Image 1 (cartoon, rainbow, N blue to C red):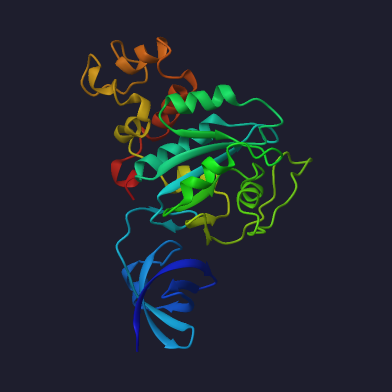
Image 2 (image 1 turned 180 degrees about the horizontal axis):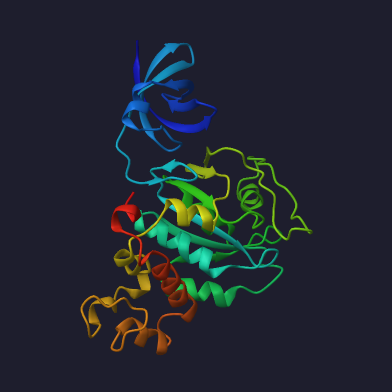
Length: 295
């Protein structure tokens, strides 16, 4: 039986679809993975054994460089964080939590404000650009910045995330019209979108791969992607030049006198909203034991 190395591009109901040697194989995973506590995920590089035609078995999951628990995605290079200018309005705490998780896992965060024809998000964009995070404003009606965004997909595995209703699927369809990903209208009664993506899947676009995923919410991040309190500051790139210049060792950068980060906030070098998000995240985990936050 022939052994091949490939990439899991879709996982549905216990079946894994692996792209290898210019074919897509429908695979089942060996039972030994359950004993090891390993669950193959979209984005995993795997070794498979061809069984019959396009049927195969996953023999080994190769080492991952990173992993998101929910939605389960492996080996991401970029995480596109999608927020809308209106309907729903931007939530900076959610954006900051997701971007911090990305940085903690060595995934580059990229922020896109959709529906930019409905409201001006330039001030928000400047906050993230000044923090060293790539940020774009985009509207499916005028497609400004389209080519710049598309260029970021080449040779990368990327994912799109954000709360429901912000236009992830519409954005992907606008960037790559051939995808035809299912979309849904905003629920006027609830003020939010309805889930339209039911499973994670990698699409080959722009010379790389992108996943359209079920949106994961703040609840998922808080439950599955906790960051240790002492590591949170390192997930805010604009803090880097200040964190080692505080008056006291072990400064939490939340309220201490002589904190260089707080001084930078007061001087307008770090945005108030970003620092508020940092303090919120710090307060959430400061009393959680390290063994829980490292799970």
